[in-house]
Image 1 (cartoon, rainbow, N blue to C red):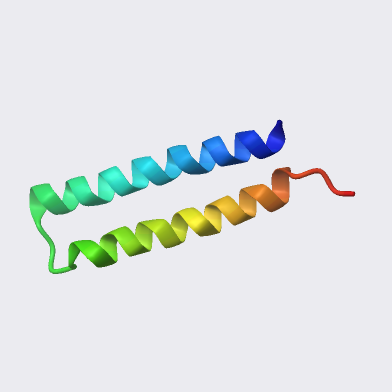
Image 2: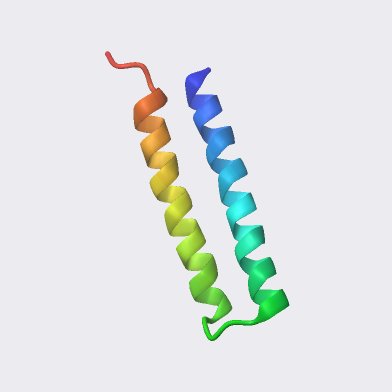
Length: 60
């Protein structure tokens, strides 16, 4: 149950971060290339996901 919650929270945060990053870049433009924006968002999502998985998984 808690692992599923961690996955859902991570996916929700990741999708919103990705959409907002790309949306701001599309509206206002930036010198950063799209690939690096997506790569940074994916990296942050992986870090948040790993943290939540560790914190929400019951210890043995």
